[in-house]
Image 1 (tube, rainbow, N blue to C red):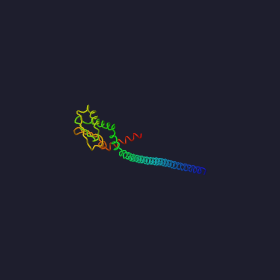
Image 2 (cartoon, one colour):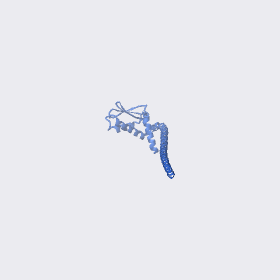
Image 3 (cartoon, rainbow, N blue to C red):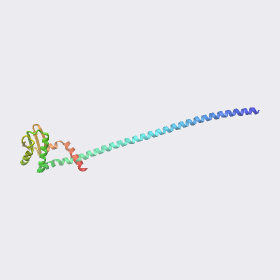
Image 4 (tube, one colour):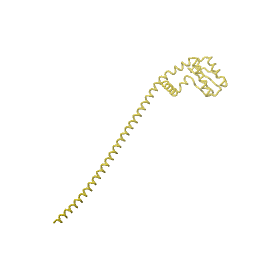
Length: 204
């Protein structure tokens, strides 16, 4: 009987040991799976957080780019409106300012010399015809002719033109240098750019 009891106990111990080994194996596998699941969940959560942060950054950058573009557009429009206002004011006063310069002998002489220099740099040196306002004094015509004497082949002819309010128009054959009131104001775009440039320099 003792041997039978010992045998049963031994068998039970073997069964219990096998059961415990199987339980341990199942637990180990379950723990490993749980860890793998947790690891995967953590990795997925990190990816989702990283993706969410990147998406938020992209949206913020897009908003910033859009805001900067709108700000640049607003500044550009504001500058254009300001420039248009300046040009309107300056352009309105320019004709009278030019006429005033022509009415004063010293600035009129400088204007005539400037016209002559411009013509010397652009025209052939022969056959000059200088058109001028009817009220340009004879003494100033003679003075300009004397200044030009060493630079042109023959004395220029002077022709009065009632349509010229101020300034000179100098011809040589088919070539013309127009430094009259109307000629100076003809290129509105170039004058506008120059006026804005001078206004910005004065404001700086």
